[in-house]
Image 1 (cartoon, rainbow over the protein chains, first blue to last red):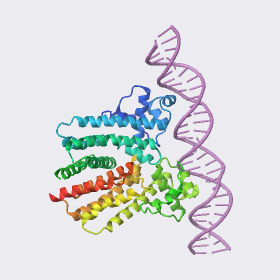
Image 2: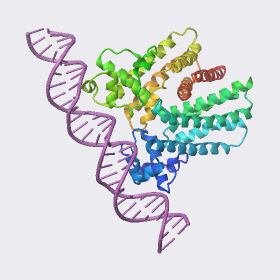
Image 3: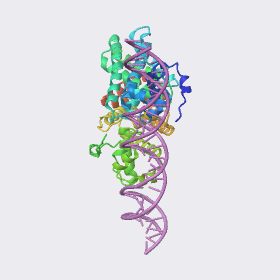
Image 4: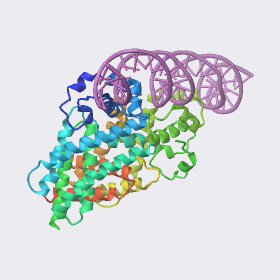
Length: 209
Length: 209
DNA sequence: GCAACAATAGACAGAGCTGTCTTGTTTTTT
DNA sequence: AAAAAACAAGACAGCTCTGTCTATTGTTGC
């Protein structure tokens, strides 16, 4: 269970996670520690004291910034979502070429994500898996995250002039989730390429029609 | 948090879960209760006493049959896996027609699963999401489950004479995971059909080559 | 009938959990 | 320099958790 901060600090290159940012204020230190622990050991399994020890802060400080553990979980999820989406969409915005190329580049960026030694799957998928019916705030946060991704996908699909924009976005969403879970379970980043091939097949099929 | 057994008993028609079997021995009663609670509220969040109350058994009985909570979790996962695979592959074995039809029928059966009001996602995906690096036995159990599915998929792919059996099986696995997660998050069973369309596109693409 | 087993009921220990509170110190702002 | 905010350190209450243990009651096989 002991989880040395060292092996994590060696991953500081990973810029897709809030937990990789070097914290300045005590609030950031708490968020960073909580982010890492929640994502690697689960939300329920991570105690407040463990977070405090890792963050090197006092308990009163935590409860000064967050009114409860649930509140902290919500804050961590939101921060992780923001950081990840900035990273992900930023990478994609830099892709040159037509919409099809950019849309398929999704899976190249995914593969980079999967290849990071600190990859632990999608925090939202993991959170919903843990709480399921228990925590509605978590479900809503995950929903919002997925909505952001769907919106981006739809914008690309419109540019691509596919016949059914919504269905293409949904298809890509399924491939995204599937690749994430497969890569998380097997620790094999190449599932991103498997998903990419299917995305190509899908676009070929709907565009030639 | 209270979780009336009634609303669950109304789902006793769902035969894909161990938790839907009517228990006879005390051991079964514990397994059934644990199965339901673990899958609906998470593993860490479910206490032993909660399981005992639901099962209506004594604590000593639980620790007579299982040496620890971890042991119980392992047993529940194995039972859930067996029950689910029997149901899933049983349904598929009953499908008439060529291998392609049977392989695509995977997603029809999935949609039935997703449509069950008691659907909570895949226990193995949820378990790995919750424990991640924490519990190796859980990872191994999930691996074994995925291996069973991949084996079945490969057998179909061989019958279908696709050029790359392994890659087709991997592709279907990604679609499976993706559909499960998407359906779990949105509670929209039609993601199974989205996945099915992509599976068709994939088979079309690799078979015409 | 009797021995072996399975199950019940519940007290109990030891630990961990969340969250509150106090007291003092450091940092920032004005 | 003075006032205000942020933080550290840790005791504490109240609860829940896992797992053990004792004492007792059914149930089954021989």
